[in-house]
Image (cartoon, protein in one colour):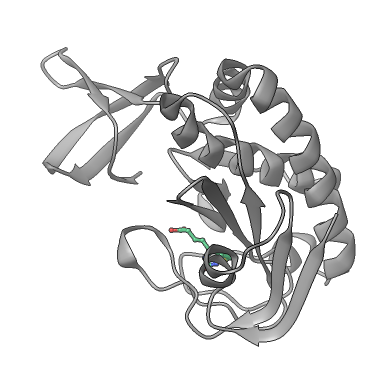
Length: 222
Ligand code: BTN
């Protein structure tokens, strides 16, 4: 497996998009000067965190492409588990510990490539609503160690995904923060209970009047 390492780079996702590399190639950087999150947000990426992008070329049906974000989130939760940290997924792309964000996933599609970008706060200081591995454990951990476990987990999950994308949704569902009140910003604002995710990975929301609304895209706050 090829790993391309930079000390400093704009964004590993941007480099992954522009390079012509084989499937499975990983771009990783000590720090990013233009780290990006969903919805055009900035992603603060100082040294000490794990910032990487995996180049995938999945031959799957178009409706299975959005499920790749769950593959990343499950991979992060499993990696944290090996460090004895209990993480949960906040739909669609955040991993939280104690309701604070420890990791975010940004997937982007360019041609046949899908870039799976993953950021994990490990030994870095985080913005206020964030938390890092070192904050939870009270000590720093080896970034290389976390990197290796994450890649192993992603390998395993990608194999499952290619055989059965639905299984990935099922696995994500078990790790998802559900049955809590949420506010979803997207096409206007909706408030309800996050009840479930459906087989396509959409968020199933129960509104105050009992109506069920399925959310494809949006920003969820707890
Ligand atoms: C989010 O929470 O909205 C997603 C954050 C994704 C951050 C990672 S860090 C590696 C990769 N490169 C980027 O510029 N973003 C992703």
